[in-house]
Image 1: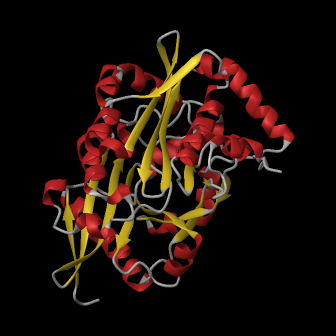
Image 2: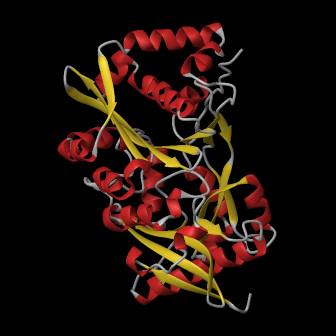
Length: 381
């Protein structure tokens, strides 16, 4: 490891040759998507792209994000209780300057890619050293980081990292990632519907009936630009009612994404009487379909079961285009399980720069994390 070096970049134009070849298995680490982050990241976020070199050869790429939570007007408006007030106070005063090694905007193991994917010694050392180098860089800019978080590792990776550089870090587990492994025998959407038990086939029929009168279509770049304001308002109305937020997207985020990633990014608009009442987005990540942000009018969602119909539409797209799985993320767990997704545990590692706080993080963190009770559904025969 003596020959391993790290170089931090803040612009995609600086990235070395061979970057996309190292990141070939993950759209979220390739130049086109990183350009989206560079040009339209949330206002309280700065992104860093790190190249890992063995001698002069690029062998790994890492994504990191610095977030300044003091720039947020709200951490989330849905829950109004004393626990939320205390949590917000703690975050604002003791955890507002956060360095993420990973992507805080999406769920899943998207922080790194290496040529030697199973060399956990190399990966662990690299992630640990990248955090140290970025902390030093931010300190030189008079930014005092409170928290360093390595986010979203699946079980095998987390277990391996704990054996090496992360044995002393607090491992946290939040809501699971809802992932739908599509049945290879499903050739068309009707095969999926036929696999439901009667209860969930009735749910599907009820949702489709409520959906009557709403049309949907994939929007072109020109259409996304023309509907930009409406799209953002639909997104924001949903985002601000989340239990906890660390960022809000820029108003031009979706058009920038389409411009940079073209056919790898899909935005589907839902219309009622020619009015845009909702949208969902998808990222095509090799054979994996990744759900991204969405938005809707709350009153239409309630009347027309719009969110559930969006989920069915995403599954239909996945089946018809022969994707192996759909990553639905870590919100709305119960309704996602009702359409076939299963909870997959993800964890992260977190360290507070204050030694006293860090010592008791295993007590503090669970009290700050919103509790969620939910029941897994089993929709298939």
